[in-house]
Image (cartoon, rainbow, N blue to C red; front, side):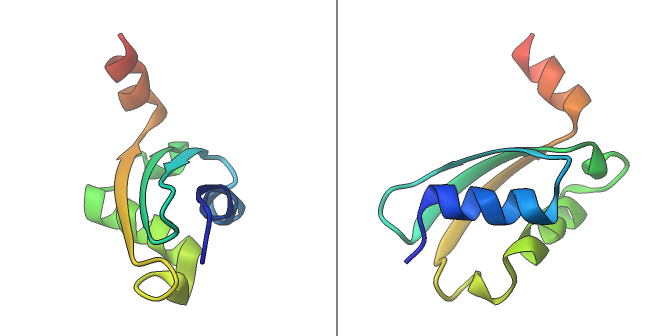
Length: 81
């Protein structure tokens, strides 16, 4: 069983330039907001694949569901305005 903090740490390890927030307290279902300059120029599917790659085989196994919101820093700044 994973915690939101453990998932955040895994994503941050795989995407060290990312700002990561993970919510979820049932140990299986999580939502994450990831802001990374590495997402620039990539489509949403490619961005999500980058995040899933940081979690490897845990996705669909120990981590049952993870809802993603991926943003570039520019998109995050625009959303905050």
